Image (cartoon, rainbow, N blue to C red; front, top):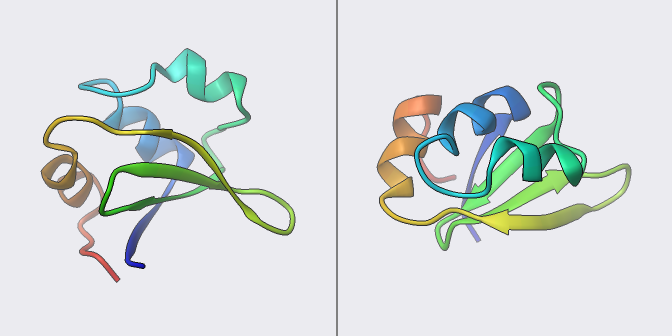
Length: 75
């Protein structure tokens, strides 16, 4: 599966347009320093101590927003 990785800080900027609210993300443990990845289906995963945890999803034209916010492509 392909992902785009980013910091929690970047994710919090991306979701302002469409997706879980910053408050919802903080409630499941997202901080500005969190390691986050998003797959092509829009699933948001946070890096826990020893596993990746699905914590939500993005809606709408998220692919363009994620690429613009990170400068990265799917890898």
